Structures are given as C-alpha cells and as structure tokens.
Image (cartoon, rainbow, N blue to C red; front, side):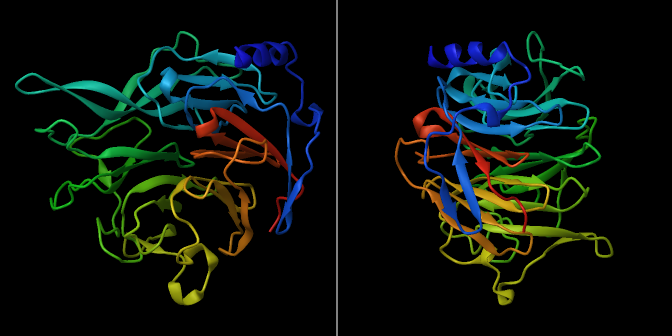
Length: 355
C-alpha cells in the first residue's frame, strides 16, 4: 500500500526531479564523496533484487517475490508493471529499448519431473515512452544443459549489453567437469538471440581454480558504453582468488586478459576487501560501484582500480543503512540501491562523481 500511495503521488508530475524531494537526513561523507539520502524511500516491494537504469531514462526493478518487473520514472513514480514473470532476478536494456530479464520457467525433465530453470526474457518496448503494460515477453536465451536431476544445473547470475546490442549472460554452478559445457561460463549472445549451433562462450576464462580469470560463483557483470568487448565481473565464492576482475579483449590472440595484475597493488584486487559482491555498476567516468550483500555496504573504485570509498552503509533500517542489498544502479549523480532485506529502494545524490 505504501508503494501505491507514493507512486500515485509522484506519477501526476512527470517533471519532478529527484532533487525536489526534501533531504532531512544528515549526509555522510565517505572518501571524496558525500552521499545525500533522498526521502522518502520507495517501499512496498517483496524482495527487490535488481535495479537498472535504462537507455529510455526509466528505472526497472526486479520485484522477485511479486513475480514482476516494476517500471518507474526518475521521480520514483510508477509507470507500469510487467505481466507475471517467475522470480525475475537480473535486468538490463539494449539500445533498441528492449528489456532483457533473467527469470525462471518451470521445465519438465523426463520421465515427467518438474524443474525450475533460468532463462532470459526479451520485452520489446516501444521507443519514446514505451511501457511494460501488456507486453508479452519471448524467451531469448536458455541453457541447453541436460538436467537429469532437478536443480542439478547452473543458474544465470548476471546480464549486460554491449554498444552493438550483443549481450553477455553469466552462469554459475557446481558441475564443472565437462570440457564442453561446464556450469561456470560467460556467454555472448547476438542481438538476434541467435545461439545456433551453440551459444558463444568467451575465451580466456578458467571454470574453476585460482587464476586471474577464474570463474567461481559469478554474481554480476557490467560492460562499458564505449566498448563492444571490455567487461567487469564479480563473484562471491570464498575460494575465488579475486572477487572483482576487469577484463579486456586481446584482438591479436582473440582472448580475454586481465587489465590489472596482483603485482600492481590496485585496490580492486585487494584480498579480503569484498566478501559477497552482489551487483556492480559504472558512472560516466567509469568509476565502479559495488554493493556487498554480506557487509551491507557500498564500495566505490575509480577507473584505475583505486578505492575511493572504504564503505558506506552498514546493517540496519535507517535511510543510510542496508540489509542484504543485492542491486545498484547509477544515473546523473544519483545512486539507486536495492535494499533487498528491507524491501525498499534507497536513493542518494552524490556530491561528486569524478575521479
């Protein structure tokens, strides 16, 4: 009910700016940045697990336990809801304004056993004000792994688009002995969702191990507006040598390599700094924002991998605290955080967004 009341109040004025909301909480200064909370917080969700700011300048929330995507305007006003979509968990949007959503479907395993598997849905939104209302999504990508045992398969854990509308999907799981199709993988899908004969797997990554580009419990991925190759991924496994890795593509060898080596001493690779990074986003200066669900904190790194904000947040229910935060997005000096455990979206104006 609180969500509906707040949305209705905001939806009447499409020109409301975030800065128009009263700020009645003392700001916190972390490193070079002051985070100013915007009130009221947006509530009424049932486990919001991801938030994405789209090219259409709309916000999209994966409202997982309500089985829907919520579309908001910049003021936080409701624009539309999707139809039923089972347990959505990750969202991105391409430059055609198509929304790509990782969610679940009920599948049947022979001889007649039901199982839940992850897929990528595509919502084709109309440009210039398209909404989710009445849009029937199609399945754009699904894992082709055989699943003889219910639940014994990898899960899709992250999604992000390139400049050319190709997109990446990360998958994580425990079955990595197959040389052909191990669970841990980063897939690249073309803008036509073509996966025939098999989806492309990015090269240069280890499915396990302690290497620079090992994949262990990948939890998120992001790409850059200027590139069709570079990416940053995060992972939660306690066995992972690095929780974050910035990857660049070597055109000569046609393989991904790490931008930073441990010997460089960059904070981004610092052991023990992050415990369970859950989501990652970038600003226009390629500053990196990572939300850690275990530490209930946000971390900011600059484009050289230097830590700019030791931590921000902490467990609690105040407008400057989090409980198991799982999503983060950025636009125009405003940071949006899915405070999942508290079933709300928090917003902060940043005093600076430079390096």
